[in-house]
Length: 289
Ligand code: HEC
Ligand code: HEC
Image (cartoon, rainbow, N blue to C red; front, top):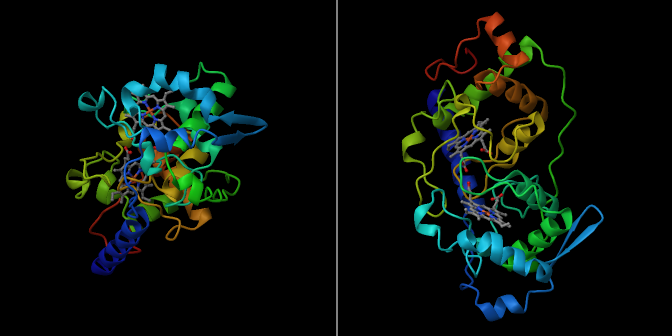
């Protein structure tokens, strides 16, 4: 059974690699190419963002990391880890859309307000909404993906059910079955058997998220955000999408279980304590957690 699981897992990884790998075959964009893409827009609610309106803000606030050509090669590049994102690739971590697809304008807009925890990417919550929408259009103008593709359709998230001890237990079984622990560790401490060797799509070492340290997940920390993170995956990283392996109702169970691993107090944590819930046992036969 264990072997069967492993096989399923490597098939899954294979599938992820295929979706995540179509790295751009186009050459690096030049300043001239970018000038011709200045008309790119973004649409967030009733706001229309214009790339050309963000030129000055980008130079002032973003260029030091993301670089003149948006390739992530700004002055700070050598000094920071994780590295600033290369916008020419058009690959984003925080999406409401399925793995391998472009994020929506709203996703990028929200990312700017939120910043990316555990990285040098700050929160930009002091900008006006118009400034942020303009910057979203500007970020998009760096990648021809937006000319050739439409953003993915956001995944459907069913309403959050009532948390119960049964659901928390069921969530632990999902955590065991789809082997989140291989990277995140059985206690969520980012020390699973695969953790030490993880690299992102550009071959840079990357750590799995440690649930126990109180750090905010990069793509938001509400229950819905956490649901979205493992059902869409963080593209460009080894954190895959589990949309094909976890049913929507089970996904909520898993969110509840993940809360029990986190350091913050929660009703899930209290319930798990009362249950005397044990961590998953990687060696237990399937179905006997
Ligand atoms: C001090 C460096 C720094 C500055 C300044 C900075 N960023 Fe970033 N940004 C980063 C880093 C580092 C990442 C990658 C973080 C990661 O992958 O965890 C990133 C990632 C991003 C992403 C990708 C998000 C995703 O979902 O993958 C966007 C979009 C972005 N930055 C936009 C901007 C904009 C717009 C500005 C200016 C208003 C800006 N950044 C300024 C460092 C910076
Ligand atoms: C192959 C290794 C791997 C597996 C398996 C894996 N993850 Fe991850 N996960 C990662 C890595 C690496 C990151 C950090 C990505 C980053 O920092 O950009 C991550 C990040 C996360 C985050 C935080 C994201 C954020 O926005 O900061 C959550 C939540 C998460 N994983 C949940 C899960 C769950 C739930 C499962 C199982 C259903 C799972 N992961 C399976 C590697 C993995």
